[in-house]
Amino acid sequence: MRLDVLNSGYARKTKVLFGVIRLFSGRPLPDAAKLVFYRPDFYGARAKEFTHEAMRGPSDWSVGDRELMAAYVSKVNGSAFCIGAHSATASRAYQDGQLVASVLDDLETAPVGEALRETLRMLGKLTRDGKVGADDMRNVLAAGATPRQVRDALAVCAAFNITDRLADAFGFELLDQEGFDAGARYLLKRGYR
Image (cartoon, rainbow, N blue to C red; front, side, top):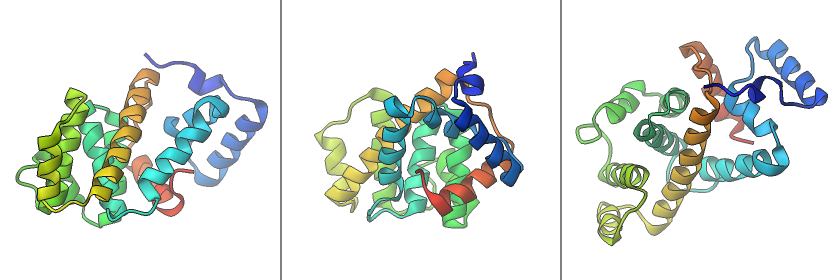
C-alpha cells in the first residue's frame, strides 16, 4: 500500500523545489528522492550521506561494482524499484547492460571476477539470512577481495537493505525504462547527495 506522505508530506519550500526539478527535467521526482526530503533531520540527511559514502566514497570497488551490489541486494530482497534503478545505473557505469543482466539472472555463470562473485554471494547470504560466518569471509578473502573491499561491500549492503525495505514500505512507484535511465544519469553525475 502506498503511503500518501510521499505525495503531500512536505513544506511549501520543498514542494516548490520539486516543481522546479520537474520543470527542468521533464519528469516528476522519483519516490526515492522524495523520501530523503521527508523529515531530513530524522532520516534524509543521514541516509544521503551514508549512501553517498558507500556508493561514491573512496573504494577499490568501481562505481559499477557498487551499483551492481546494490542491484543484487535489491534482487535478493525483491525490491522492484531498486532493482530497476540500480540495474540501470550499473549498466551505464559499466557500459554493459548484458553483464548486469547476467549477474542478476545467474551469478554462478555470469562473466565477473571471482572476488566480485564471492562478494556478491556473501552479500546475498547476509541479505537472505541476516548473518554470515567466518567461513563466508574466508571465502571472499581467498577469492581475492581485500578486507577494505569487504568493509565497503558491507556498507553498500547495509545502505540497500534499508533502502529496499523503505521502497517496499512506502510503495515506491515503478518508473519506465526512460525514467530509470534518467535517474542513472543523475546518480552517475551527482551521486547520492
